[in-house]
Image (cartoon, rainbow, N blue to C red; front, side, top):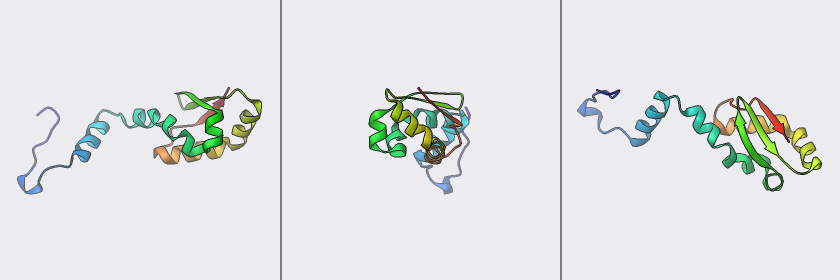
Length: 103
């Protein structure tokens, strides 16, 4: 029946959160959802000061592209690069980010 299975009445109604999760997983959308949430978590990962001096530009093929107009902030991000990647991947629940590119 269109990808849905019949449920035993004794099981009761299925929570909408479970239905949504099954839908997302069946369409392989979990990575895309995680990728699209990267900019939302940037400030949480790097802190307010760095977040105001930088911008998430894009995410492509495991690379997170960040821009900043200051070489000082670029150097600071480079120093924290590994911890930023680890923190962001932890928040996303998957090892999606492999590299940080700062321009």
